[in-house]
Length: 375
Ligand code: KG4
Ligand code: ZN
Image 1 (spheres, rainbow, N blue to C red):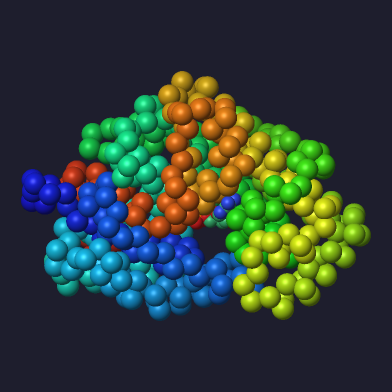
Image 2: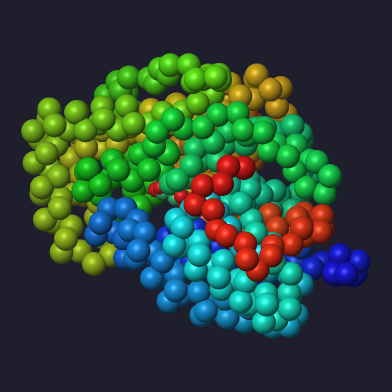
């Protein structure tokens, strides 16, 4: 048995749930030997969002070379692996299938056990991986986890249980995910895709209190509490209305579209120069509203559940303003991974598989991918 060896099991992680093809090699759930991520953003950029068919096609192209490269970078061979971990859901069905089918083939051909991982668990485990890889202690339990990405905005209560962890859902978005709101606002304003990183960068140059967007008010969810649910569609519509009623912003969008279409790989400075102060103020005000919505609910969850730590992960956890806000409110009990472990990556999938492997779970070769798979 691999877990009775003196060395930690060698894990190959594979992630293809959305628009990043990623492969990683880890020792146990603590040492990253390689973690390669190939972003499809340039393919989807012209559409302002992920096109599922194109995502599957790009994963098909990338999966074999990226797995080979992850093994080569780690200096390991397929034969040396102890297990293969793959994202089984949630995500785009076709995209998931590419990773899952390839992982099954490798598992069968090389005779290695296979573990199917929930992508959301991967994002939460990224926080713990960050701690372990630096030899830092685990957060104190129970913890509230805010998972905030392009497809999800969730709050969980997390505690160790058995060899692994238990996740109790506390709140979720009723409509758009926070990252989706960033991406849609960026598309509306003719900024680049994905929208989060560029809005994050440009919002620093605007005034957060310039436009007082209304705060979210939710009706009680049928059969449940509403206090910890999120909503972003109202804010997205408010931004749209604001733009529609300000001719200067619309003019700016047209100019920006023309100006930036001539640039191959514009840096953030070029984007800033293509934005008026009014546009920058709009971005800062939008971001302040998103951060307020996320931070107020995460902090309320900690208060209600007596949490001793707050874990923040997912692509939007890369946001400087959100991290600053939560770190200021929670202090050292706020844990967020390094940027490369915030956005989709296979290292978090490999790390999340480890306790399942120790618990003896194995994925059968007829296992399906789950586009929807609550954690
Ligand atoms: O976790 P992730 O890589 O993929 C999903 O599972 O969805 O998250 C991608 C999302 C995108 O919507 C992107 O705009 C957003 O994360 N994002 C950010 C930042 N970096 C990425 N949002 C706000 N600020 C950022 N710095
Ligand atoms: Zn993700």
